[in-house]
Length: 397
Image (cartoon, rainbow, N blue to C red; front, side, top):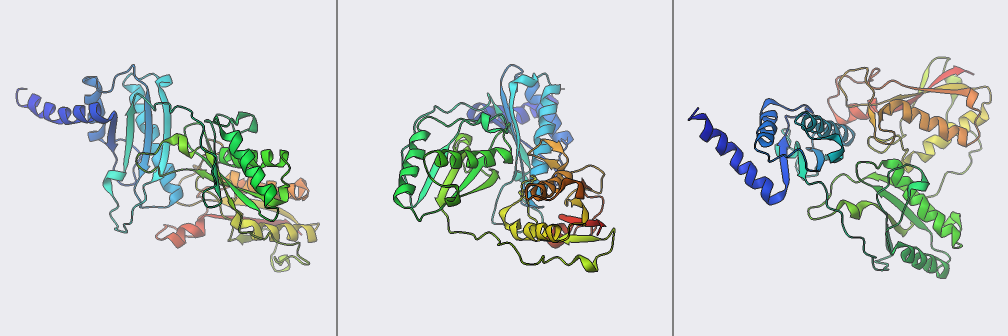
């Protein structure tokens, strides 16, 4: 026992000093693993025993991954690591209501390409005391190189009713409106961003659309405005605050032309038999999200015209994902906070078509997760992209 105590103190003392100086504890994980290893569990047990992790403090828990793997899989991995630490802290006596943030930030970007990754990035940060609230102060009305930023309070619902601007932001929108009125040929793009425990990609979309709505109210026509959802901010530079990423960024739009109505559909269904599938190669989604990226517009429009010019065509929309073990479990959808990513992506295509006027009874949709890979095992980015897909199954012609 006399020999064990000095060893234990030599392990605990540096951690104690580190916790006192930064209020943050780092716990590390094995490569591609989201469960706590024995060393990490012992570390947390010891910190709790010496009251370095008190049960009466607030906590923020932030998960990370290294650059190995895909963006999508690393978001899922980092979130599962954060969830594992949350569960363990609760087992040590920390009440659930004291854990105010549990989030996965995905991979930490580095200019490295080694096969071994970066071990210190496979971690979870435990912020003792939680996140200090930043004082709300009006920001300066500015246009830096034709770029405006509008900041929001943290949002807890996906609906527009949950949107609240920070103090001083109404003046920025008014300034932008005056600029657009004086420059009648200028179009803009509004990119929404989100971050935090209760926010999703849909929140970033609603923020962009809220700014567009305010500009419509002041007389700027919708045809001059394009909105995009940039989703969840993953990598926050050192010294930055989460508060600075709840925002919409407005820039002068270079003008991406939307596809014109086609005279004839580009998808030829005459060569596809019933129960066969057509693979849509250029449907892109935000990582961990069912939000369709704008680069998918042409492919979706071609599918729409195919349905329009073939009124008896009936289809099943089938979603597939990559980057999981061969399991029946679907991927995690950060928009809906549920394991149903492939199904929700298929539903997004379905909703696009119904919004364009295609009859709902001509379409069904379902998700298969990773159950039907085209390439297995996945040994390259090309293999992952092949498995990450949406397919259209011909039910009737």
